[in-house]
Length: 423
Image 1: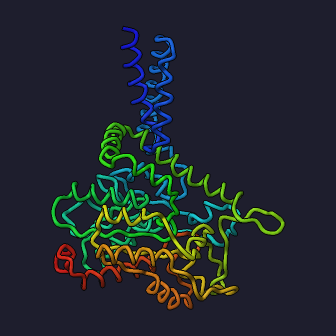
Image 2 (image 1 turned 135 degrees about the vertical axis):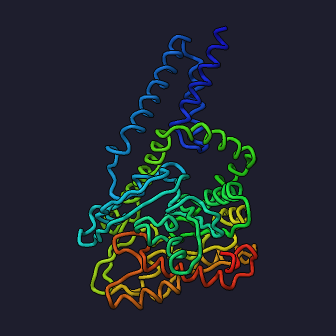
Image 3 (image 1 turned 90 degrees about the vertical axis):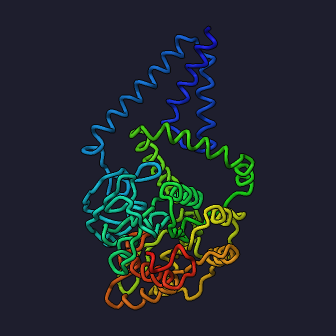
């Protein structure tokens, strides 16, 4: 009888701990170790531990549900305020005075005159994506990260909104920070959630969607059947989907860890001759005004080669989007406009890789590099830019270039789902 009691208690403890761990091999492995260690406890102590974790979880859930909307908002922009694990908080509309972009949040040592204060309206639909209304049978769906979600920009300037307003293309926004694995899963989810014929575009950002992958990590991931992985993830998300605390906790800790990683890089990255740690950011003068850049993204742009052991290729093969949009990093757009040490030629390792993959899969792909460079050079005499000077993201000028290029692609694409007269 005691064995049965312990087994049930360990099972309950494991389910409670699911609210606190990421859905990764390390996270789930740690959960199994902690929960499994419960069998070595006396049954009374084990029961007390389960009760304590349960009461803590209930208290945190009540706190988040009652206090989060009014008092738990220590954020400088709406993204962190509303971000959960896989989506934003649903049915929200906030107006926030944003004091600066993400570069100043990453590196407070940057000069304060770099800041571009703006007001940002951020609205979400009933499933937590950045749309003014719920899905209404839109025939164009855009999947990607913060560039699709429009982080740093107000609602009317988001890519899907510009497509709707300026080109009459009814587009639906499925943007939320992830990697290509997350995009592939989101496309599979969207095709099941919104049955019918929809044109789905995947937007890939050069800065963080082309990460170098460890071959051993890929091999271990591939050793577990994908069907089993999907079942486990679906079961865990079903449990966690009822907990507002879990969504907020994991969303915040994930983003906090991203900041910590950037700070670690600050201490361990390249050093000069005096062994002083390099910065995670740097500033260049462009047309007499400062412009900030993220060093890690600039390093990606300057890669001579790119090899991720076909990770992006395999994700594209799984997802098979109807087209792909390649968004270059800010450094690639503005390096030739630096007032000192301008860079005229840069390697194209990420685009070369992507274009070869999409050509093999017969997926239309558009490189926004030349159109963005052309627009950047055109408007810089007026002091305008296609990326925020204090941010890693594009602004309404850059987004308008993307909207134009998407509309142009859709007017020529042969895919039946993406015919312009259907959109």
